[in-house]
Length: 402
Image (cartoon, rainbow, N blue to C red; front, side, top):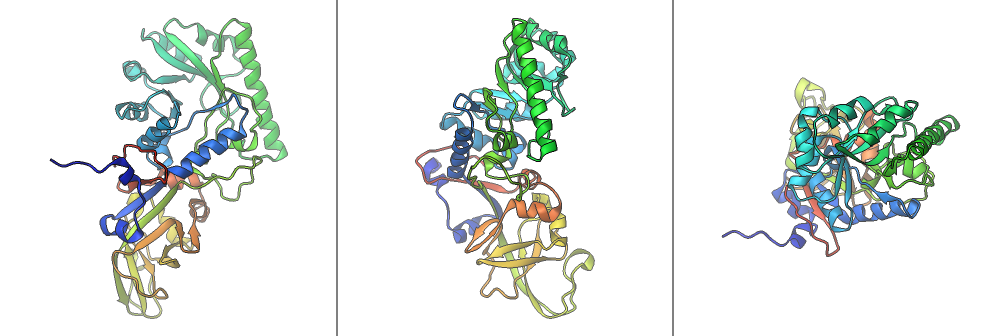
């Protein structure tokens, strides 16, 4: 009979040489850093404000099941996801507490909302009426559009908003909105954010004046916490900041919070070979060396979420604490790097794509900047073929199914 090792052993970090001997590509998830970020964000907020971690898109690439299970263990009992299947997956893996679906769920899935005890965002008064007609006792939060013009009943439609709290079959447990430019504190953006907050609070007062309870009130996501921490709500919904990152690495934020990156991304060296001058490398002969070089082929590619444009914009990895530039096209499952100046490399060595190796560090934000996107996209696109390895120095244990 096979027995699994204790979870504490599964959480123990493996030396780079051991990890690369059994893995093709993997992301190391530091749960101690996750814990630190959660406490730092909570400390920045008013004391009565609780945290609702956003674990959509596989917890921004960090592994939603394992992240939510760990957060459950340290006392978190409210989560937000983007769509119903994400919520169902958490329930099937034993995640407890409220799970709010932030966006639209087709009415044909109403029974699944009921069955899995999920909380649905009422994205418009019309949608709320239709959901109520399904005849199921469902939990809900009402979404107010205060100026982003994405989802939510427009803030001006007070009577339509109030009608959502009087629906027979829906138990409204919260009311929320979303800030569209809280990532900036420049005067124009700050004025717009403050206007959104005022619109939202005005709606809350109108709901209460009508004799209805708005439930838990929330409007801040990551940048709302980092730049406007004094907003006094019941909940805040950190996403990217919970994972120790900013959407753009050079963003300046108001709250004096030290965030610690939770994820490192690594891959194994599959082969090292000498390539003669003028011999083309990779698809399309994109790179032809002008002199003899040594290259290493890594076991990760765009099929795992590595942006192809990284090769065109000075991208590199770290091997043995040194930089190795990407050469040629990034392939679906592999890519090549120039290791001519790095001595002693052999197959099985570890290449670091995000994280620290020796005195060198590559951040997800640096990659995002090179590729003209945001950090959120870089980490959330890390694919399912990349194994997640959860590490912690504490005694906390989590289920680590991968």
